[in-house]
Image (cartoon, rainbow, N blue to C red; front, side, top):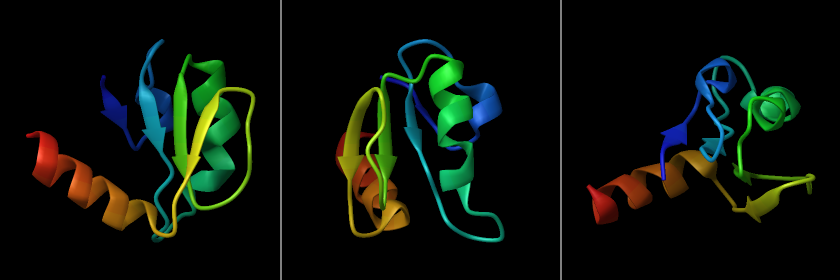
Length: 69
């Protein structure tokens, strides 16, 4: 599974993690889905693909990377 935090880089089958920071990537979730994301990790909402709602996407990503890479 490839993880992307930039919706423009999503390829079919990727996971898109919507981070909040200077920009709220939640506004790009639909773009990520259009590019083929098969899983969305976000802090709110439900989408047309598998969706994992977590309390903090940045913490989720850090923990995922620690445990898998």
